[in-house]
Amino acid sequence: MGRSVVLQLLDMGAHVLCVDLADFAETFRQSCGTHQNLAADSLDIRDVEAIDQFVSERIAKHGVPHG
Image 1 (cartoon, rainbow, N blue to C red):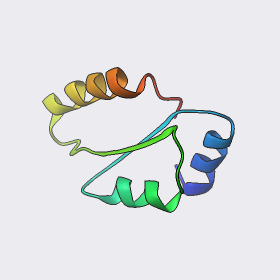
Image 2 (cartoon, one colour):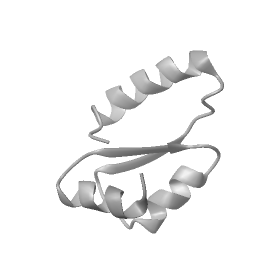
Image 3 (cartoon, rainbow, N blue to C red):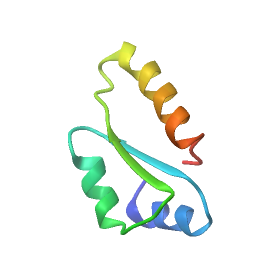
Image 4 (cartoon, rainbow, N blue to C red):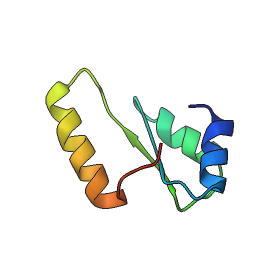
């Protein structure tokens, strides 16, 4: 999703989790300003085993994201 879509979701009260490689997600989050409902994390999707753990941990920490 692009920045404008993420900002619209946040304005509607959605919880958004940005996921990307390295620090790209965090950089994107910072460019969107401070929003309580916006979280950023990094994940290498080539590591299939890590995906399930990642999703479980993030849902436990942030709740189910809307986008």
